Length: 153
Length: 143
Image (cartoon, rainbow over all chains, first blue to last red; front, side, top):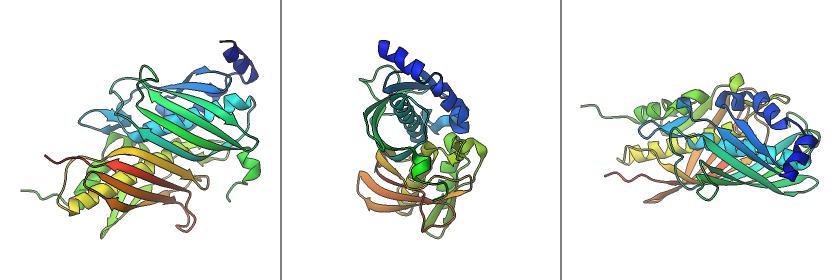
């Protein structure tokens, strides 16, 4: 709990700013529910336009991809403690089971290694508990991406 | 007595709510399928650059893989339900600029139960891909 308070004072409100600043996540309704010293927990509501299988009402894998990618990015920001540009290098997602229809989906991400140039993150998507995951993710991010990789190259 | 065509299969996939949300189009030329994601502001993930959200590019390539599997299964006389992603690895090569994005999938192996698929997405030039996806997909059983 103490860790969270430290993180929040280090970079207050960045999760909300990232969710609302990105048109895609604003459109999807992504919310940050908790930020730790090197973790972030995000929630996405169930919306009809997210459905990937009309028969079952299960949301598309792509929605889970976006949620996990975004959660991983915020865990990196939390660990950095200062606003900087980051870029996803790669993102691996394992899909364990379909997400339950009509339920909000959560993603908990942990930036377990923060290097000078690269950060490594693990994340889990779930409805109730991380012990019963919909999907898990593993990602690597480049830090200070805009200075290291100029726009348009 | 309506025999479905490969184009019908693709129209059904592009009609899925999430594909419509993205604005994804699936275009068939002979046996070659190209997915087209027309740019719209709502796809942006980083408003500063600006760049298309990485999740959107992953989602687009995943749909491209599913569509290519469906086309191949249709050609083989299998039909019906969509494959399910088991795992995907997305590599981000360049930032997705605020322009249209294209993707094509290659079926590296279609087994009885599992398909291995590679997808590449590009914008101005196919020789400068912006992202790639490698994934395994579980093929549906047709009863």
